Structure formats: structure tokens, C-alpha cells
Image (cartoon, rainbow, N blue to C red; front, top):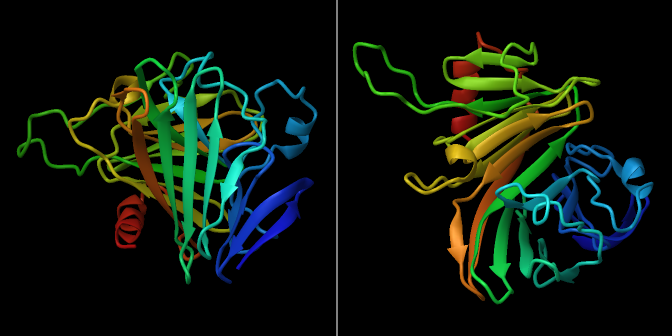
Amino acid sequence: MTQRIEYRGWPGCVHLTNGSADVVVSTQFGPRILHYGPSLDVNLFGEQYDAARGLPSDAWKLVGGHRFWVAPENLDITYVPDNDPVEIVLDQPGTLQVRSVDAKTGIEKQLDLSLAPRGTEVIVMHTLINRGVWPIRVAPWALTVMPLGGRAVMPLPERRPHSESLDPAGGLVCWLYTDLGDPRWSFAPTGVMLDGVPGQPPQKIGTLVEAGWLAYWQPAATFIKQFDVVLGADYPDFGCSAELFTNEYFLEVETLGPLVWLEPGESIDHVETWQFRTDLPRPDRATMAEWQDSIGGI
């Protein structure tokens, strides 16, 4: 079912539901997916709605939910405010397309969203299109804001004994504010975990996630996003296809596509597949291998 609703004070939103999952997309700004969860009463995404409404109309507003950015991170391109109404195209039940072109950069952002007829699966295709007159070097960047109080999981490559392999298996990318001794970080042989804790300073880590998924456990459900990884491609941020970020307000699970040169009129796509599960316990070092096997067997 598809209908127009007012959601948390935002008028004119598009609501998709199949009885197992609900998705809400803004029409007043974006592209922005405001809600994903088992009902309209339970949003697995983080919300900063009241704070956003208090900012000037020309300011960049976090808002929350799922947003679509342009990498590499740049104040003049990445943080262009997305406060204007977007174009919505509704073709078939359970699907929609959201379009927005930034007049300053000439970059069009397009989200194609499809909710499965049954179950919790949502496919979100992120498309960057160069509507300008000059080539640009960009990568699609999909950021999902989660509420604090949960634990994010970023898988690492399969481990092997020292006697079987002497080669490095990848690296962790840190930012100048990254503190690996922060107690919010937990490390298992096959995964990195990050806790969302109120009132704490920013933390971030990225890497090339060959497994092609990220997850965020919270009491309501575990949010899982799957994505394609192009081995050997030029990824932003020293080769990151995925990143975890948190601060005092929220935690983000982020995926990125490869960096490419887009000629005028050219585009690049980046696809995520979302699901949520209510049967997974809070992950920790002792249970990480079993927990990840369960995710990989979706």
C-alpha cells in the first residue's frame, strides 16, 4: 500500500507498507528516507527532527533517517543543504523514485526504492548524475542514521593462521579524532563493533568490507544493509567501502561506491538491500563468529 501521510510533523510524506515493514520518504526535502521499521510506531532509524526544524532554511540539517551524500567529504559539495522539495515518481505499488538537482554543483541525486511484497526487504538504488558542464570525480555515499543505545558491526576479512598466510589482509582507516582506546570500540577476530552512547565525542573507522554488509543491533531489531563491493576499484578515504561513525547524538552505518570521473550526463549507481531481524542477540566478541554466520546466511 502507498499513501500520503503527515509523519512526525512533516507533511506530504510518502508511506509504503506491506504489513511487515513500513517506509516513509519525505517530499519536502531530501532525498531523505525518514522511517524504516516494523510499523509506523517503531522507527529503526535515528531522528533529529525537532533540532532540524529549529535551524534556518538555508542551513544544512541533519534531520536523521537515511540520506544520500557525495564523497569525498567536502564542505562545498557534501554539505550543500538539501532543504528544498524533491520530485517524487510513483510508478508501481511498493516502488518510488526521488529526484533532486543541486543548482550550485550540478549534481542530481536520485533514489529508487522498492519494498518487497512480503517480508522486510527494501532495495535502495542511489544514483549520482552529472548535470553540470564539467567532468567531476565523485563517489556515491549512503549514510543511515541510527539511534543511540545499540551496537554496530563491521565485518573484517576471514582470519587464517600465521602459518598459512604472511600477506596483509587489509587495514583500518582512522580519522584525526579516532581513539582506538575508546571503550565504545570492541574488536573480535572477524569484526569491529561500535557502541552508540549518549554524550560522547565523535569516533570513526572505515575499511574495505569485502563481505558486503553492515549491521546495527538495537533492542527493537537488527538493521542489516547489504551492498556490492568492487574489488580493485578506487574507493574514497584510503579505500573504504564502509564506515562507522558516532557522536553524542547518533550512530551512522555508511557505505560508499567507487570514485569515478563523471562526464556531463553520465551517472553512477550504488545499491543497498535492507532487512531487519528480531531474532539476533546483542553481538560481542565471544559470539561474533556465530552471529556473523547468521547474517551471512540471510
